[in-house]
Length: 79
Image 1 (spheres, one colour):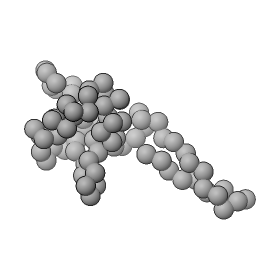
Image 2 (cartoon, rainbow, N blue to C red):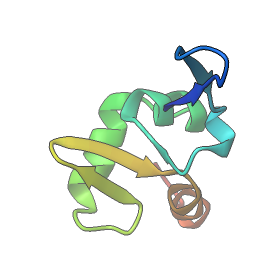
Image 3 (cartoon, rainbow, N blue to C red):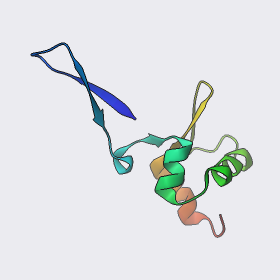
Image 4 (cartoon, rainbow, N blue to C red):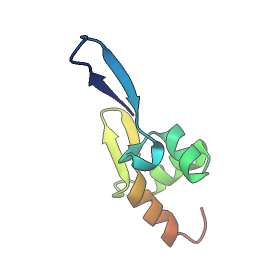
């Protein structure tokens, strides 16, 4: 996720990167990297748990709610 910060002196937008551990939702590649689970397996988990609270759909994009998915993994015995 990239946020833009605007300088008062210049009308130039600077990219400010938010660390993965501070983000509310992660893309599939980000979630795979953060949780150590493959992208293919994440898509399978999403398909198996349709409508789960850790899934965030933004248009055609799927995001993983970081904290809720972490809780899901804590309860899981096998991934």
